[in-house]
Image 1 (cartoon, protein in one colour):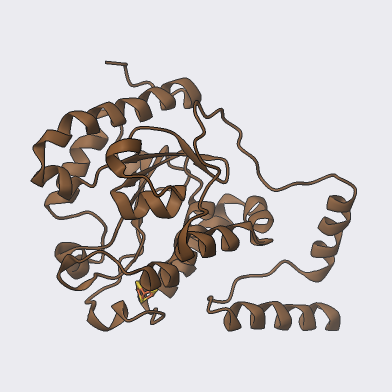
Image 2 (tube, helix red, strand yellow):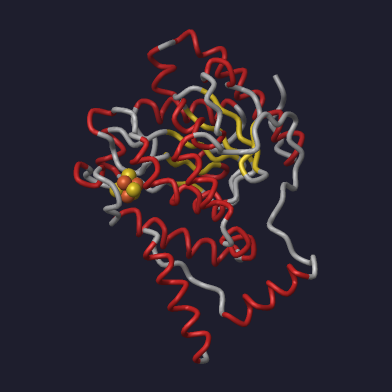
Length: 282
Ligand code: SF4
């Protein structure tokens, strides 16, 4: 690495640390300049949607501070760098992100946690599920959705012909348990949002299903109620997003079982049409 590259790396690492992020692995200056030239020539652009989205009701997060910070973070130059990473590099970066989450102290939720819960699943999943925050069982195990709500979510996954170990990645908006399972506060979601933003770009799901109102608002920017917009399509940076209810809420409100099943069918049918997923329609 030459002197100029070294200085460039120090500057970009400092920028990450000053903005509260964890150090990212930066592209060498020479490569960066080559890409800038390509962009000026109109050659290379950020990753765009490669699959059709039936209905687009929002272009992404645009409401509230968490959503605005989330959108800003997502639009940064990092987009392009993430898009160029190989599968092995993404895997490595995801492990680094998980390690950063486990020792994170960016918000007060770190004070009450037993274990942080970064998320779990496969790279390039068919579906990424995004909930709100870990509960008691997740806090003690360090794994997402392992309690009663997790077992119920497993049934949803199986019902649309998927396997949790092969086709799915699961995470939450905040990675540490809020006390008494309360909703995450906006400042907590704000602090944790960059992790989710990076996770989505590293994991690269074909479609995202948000679970509950908090993750729906964060990823879609809508301020409408979940009872109005569940089962409809939004996009987040070209990735289709379908909101549904949180499994815990459905366990408490059995009248939402039917709407959830309809939402799951929307996702299953999209997968059949766009990914070759072989589940039969019902
Ligand atoms: S909730 Fe997120 S931002 Fe807050 S301490 Fe945990 S990992 Fe860090």
